[in-house]
Length: 132
Image (cartoon, rainbow, N blue to C red; front, side, top):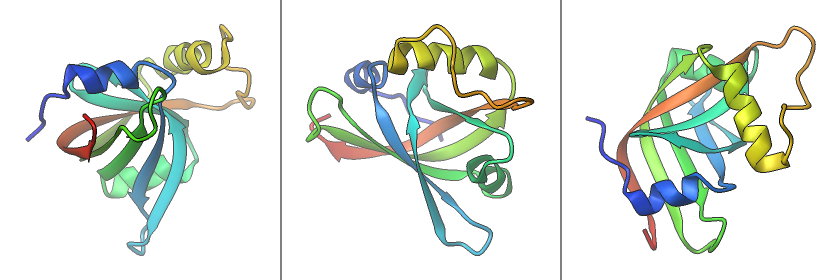
């Protein structure tokens, strides 16, 4: 059952919050990637591209763990456990929004020709961490 993310946590997710995403490979082993984090209502979001390991893993097993440190104080961190969905809807605009936040650029400069962007939206079931 999805839970509400505390406003104090949402605040640091709206900053330059880098996260580590854990998904499960087909053999059950963990796969970890660093991503730019965002928040929308009760969901934690990140952006990726079609063909990468994260969306492939999440389509076969949507369980996900995301660990995020506060940009202002690395001792403050949150660990989100939840269920992810992968969508194309709004993904192009979302990566540009993140590029503005993280790179200070109006458009994401690293698009590959023909690349299809995706948003991974995580419904959070449990939050752990320190200093929340």
